[in-house]
Amino acid sequence: MAPKLHGSLFSTATLRAIAALQEKGIEFEFVAIDLRAGEHKKEPFLSFNPFGQVPAFEDGDLKLFESRAITAYVANEYQGKGTELAYHDAKKMATVGVWVEVEAHHFDPIASKLFFEKVVKPMFMGLEPESVVVEENQKKLGEVLDVYETRLSKSKYLGGDEFSLADLHHLPTMQYLMGTSTKEVFEARPLVSSWAKDIMARPAWIKTLAMQKQA
Image 1 (cartoon, rainbow, N blue to C red):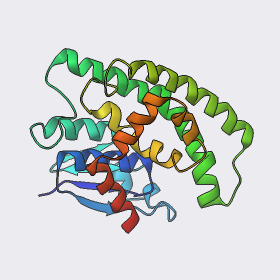
Image 2 (cartoon, rainbow, N blue to C red; image 1 turned 135 degrees about the vertical axis):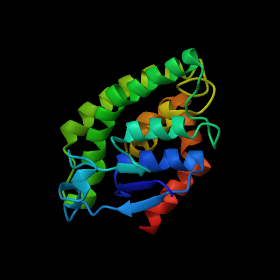
Image 3 (cartoon, one colour; image 1 turned 45 degrees about the vertical axis):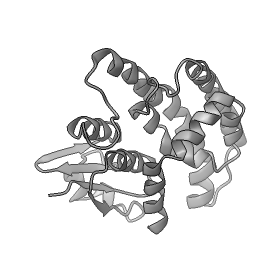
Image 4 (cartoon, rainbow, N blue to C red; image 1 turned 90 degrees about the vertical axis):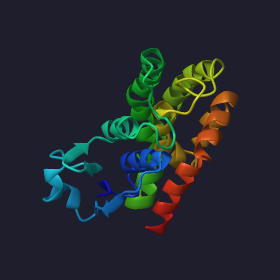
C-alpha cells in the first residue's frame, strides 16, 4: 500500500515532503487539504496533526507530522532507493545534521517572513508588503547567506559534496522568494547563487513543481 501525504500544494512544508518522496522515487498518494476551507483545523485531519498544520503522512500504521520529520523518515526508511538523502556514516550524517538545523533555525524563520510579505500578502490577501519588514529581513537573510557563501567555498553542497536533506529543505521557500525581488539577495553571492540554481534544477524538484502547477 502506497504511503499517503495529506497537505496543500501551495504550502512550503508540504512541498518539502513531496520533494523528498520524489528524490527517493517513492510512489505515493496525495490527499489535498483545502486550507481556505479550514480543513486542516477539523477532523479527520486533526487526528493526523493535533496542531492543525499541513502536511501529515501515513506509511502503513505509521502516522507523522512536521515536514522535516517526514523527510528524515523517508530518507532513512527508503535508503538504497533514489537519492541518498541521509547516510549511515555517523560523521557524514552529523555534518548534514548541522546544516539541517541551520536551515530550520537560521534560514527558515527569516525566509518565511519574507515569503509571507512578498508572496502570501499580495497573492492571497490582496495586501502590499510592509517595506520595513522586508528590508529588515532581507538584511538578516543576507547575513545568513554570507555564512552559506563561506560554507559553499569548502563543499559543493551544504552537507558535503553530495545533495542531502540539508539542501532539499531550502527548496520550497527559496523557490517562492526567487520569484520576487528578494532573489537579488541570493544572486549577490556567487556560490549561493550557483547552489540555488543547481538544486532548483533537480528533476525531483521539477516534478514537485509540476504537481503544484496541475493543482
